[in-house]
Image (cartoon, rainbow over all chains, first blue to last red; front, side, top):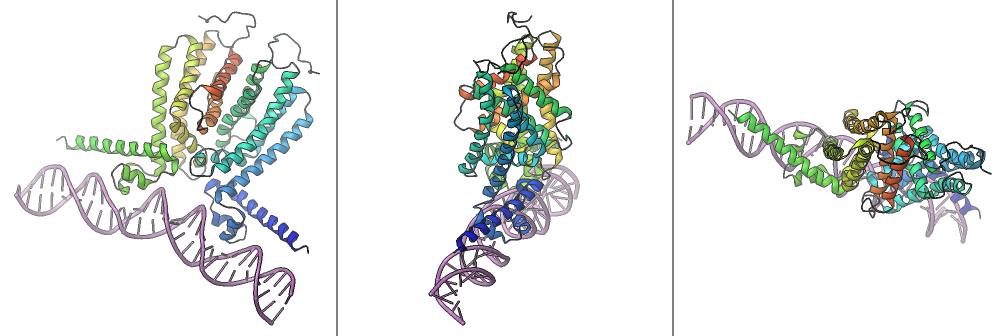
Length: 219
Length: 219
DNA sequence: TCATATACTGACCGTTAGTCATATCATGGG
DNA sequence: CCCATGATATGACTAACGGTCAGTATATGA
């Protein structure tokens, strides 16, 4: 009796169809895309959406979480190519920045949810989901910097977690500007310079003071 | 005939009464505070609100702009107390950070408006109003750093504007975290450490390399 | 063929930003 | 004093939203 299994498969497919319609519309119109529109795009009745997602917010957050998965895969990919803590730290930082620039809609909708809706309105649960996903990705930065400390590239008196958060939040702060600015296209131009500066200052801050030392790869 | 003058005065008073009611409610409930609530609090009919402010968004932004004025006065005050570019840079940075922490509601509602509503929904005009106010305040940072370069404290190959933006955006990125976190109270604790780290790395990045020199105030 | 369970639907509800026909009030001439 | 005039204030109304639920359609297995 493969009925139950097929049912399950169909259920997943429907869920994905809704998610896809939602992604398109949230990307296009932001949070103000309506459930009616999404239902229409998914070729379903509005009520059906609520069989798969408890609320508009839950659907919205599902799209956000998608974005986190995309970013995590990218980080893994870039990390695999990098050698040594210097490159790894750089790989994580720019994987984040480039992901957000190339998929600015994911970034935009994520940032939205973390402001107003963090207020009483929405369930704490959804916020926590996003926070947990953030912490998971932050760990990549922590690990890279930790390696840097272990290998002697970075000072051993730095707070590894604080430094990671700083890198993350500096990039996010700049991304807010860059992504809001419709004109600016890629990492080139003014914003690219800013991301580089942020990374440069972060590295200078962490590296051991070796004004004249060589930069050989730390074994 | 002082009629016109009195009318004008009354008009201003009404406007302020509405603004005050709006501030209280936006602070308490965020953007989801309703125009009906604000009207009730201001002891006016809802329609009256629309004689003084074109839309809910315009009223909301008016409250935001209030916050910018408060911050600017604080910057002026702190700047007056500071001597030399090191202290001045520090004064501007912490005036910003402390203002946002002590008046987190102003920060919260500002950040909200700069995300979702930046999308097509609202008039570009309102966004621009906020951007102009931001640029005005950014100038305080630019001036302080410029002084630092002129006095030889900072390297003369740094991009003064980029460095200012970096300080601003790093602080904002951390503030997003700190202000969202209901628990965290003041500049003490984990977040305080982060703000300090951000400032420290910024200064290290800008200062001339003097690995062995003394840190005495550069006069 | 039909009873039952499962999945879908859209008319409906409460709520909200914004509008506008109407009501209220102050002013100054008669 | 009284009333005509214009300025100001009002809240019932509309359209649009998220969310609900009574009812419909479809699939299953006896």
